Image 1 (spheres, rainbow, N blue to C red):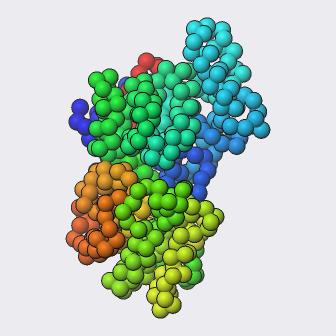
Image 2: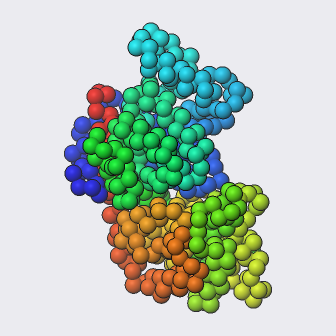
Image 3: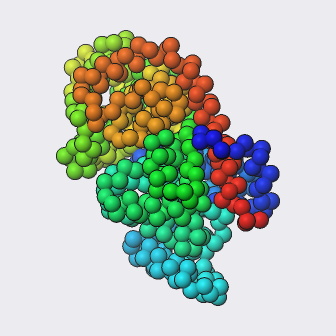
Length: 450
C-alpha cells in the first residue's frame, strides 16, 4: 500500500455496510475561539459523511451539555448529536468523566452482557459508544504530544481510555504524533497507538514517530491534513478595523499573528523555546511587507479571545497595528468580525500572498492555492507544507533569527506568482488523497459491523 494514500474510493465503498453507520468524532471541541480546531471538526464531519451514503456522525467530548451542535460540513447547517463529559457534577453524575471511566472499566472487565446493557442504559456516554461503528480521535491535530504540557495530554487521554474499554479500539484520524519530552507521555502514546484500528499521520516525520510507537502491529498511513477538505465561504461584507466600504480589494497580503507565540506561550517565558523573537519579528515583517508591497495588509486572527488572553490573535494584532506610524497604519486592517472557520478561509482566499503562524490559517491559504509562508513553533508545519510541495516555505522559529526570517518571507513574496499554479495543483491532489484515505479507514474500521 503506498504511504501517501490507501485504496481507491471505488474499491472500498462496495464493502461498506448497507445499514446506517454512526461514526464518532473526538478531539475537536463543539465551540472554541480557536478556529483551527473547529475547522478540523467540520472537515472531519464532511469526510466521514462523504465516505459512505449511509453515514452519520456524532461528537464526543468535553462540553457543557448534550444539545446538538450546528456544523456546516457541506456548506449547509447540520445538527450533529453531542455526547458530552464534564469534570464537574453540575452536568449530572452520569456525565462526569470519573463516573464514565469507572463505568467503562467495569464494562470491559465484567464480561457480563447483562451488566454492560445496564451500564449503557445508565451512562449516556457508554450507550452512545455502543451505537457507533467506530470512534476516531484527532486531538486538536497536534495534541497527541506533551508539547502543551503533561496535564493537557493526560486529560485528553482519559476519554480515549473509555473508548478502548467499551469499543476495544479507536481510529486515530490524520494528526501530528510527538514530540514527547516525557517518557511517560511516550509510553501512553505507544499504549494507544498499539490498540488503534487505524492510525493516520498528516506528515512524514510524525508518521515515522507513530510507526516507531506502533512497531510491527500495523502500518501507519500518511494523509494530508483534513482541513484541506474544508469548504470556504467568504462573507459578502467583511467587517474590518478600521472599516472599509465595498468588497475586499485585489492584491491583498494577509498576515496571521499567533497570540500564543506573541505572548511567549502560556507561561510568558518563551514556552516553545524559540530563537525567533516573535513579537519583534511580527513588527519587522509587517513593516517589511508594507515597504515591499504597495497594496493593503490584512491582519487575520485565527484564534479569537479576550485581548488579555495569551491565546488572543486579535489582541496581538491590535497591539501590533498600534505600534505602526500613522502613515503606515492606514494601510493595515484587522479582520474584526466573529467569523467561523469557513468564513475565515474565504477571507484568506481573497489574499494573493499569506504569512501565518497558526497552522490552520496556513492550511486555509495553501488549500486554496494561495502562496503562504508558515512561521513555525513546532515540527508540525514542515510536514504539512511538504505535503503540497512547499516545504521550503516554512520558517522554523526554533532555529531562525529575526533577520533571516524576514528575508525568507520577502523571498517567498517575490516568488509567489511563479509558484502559485503548482501549489493549486498540489492542493487539489491533496483533497483527492483525503477522499481515498477516509474511504479506506472507514472500510477497515467498520469491517465486521455489517
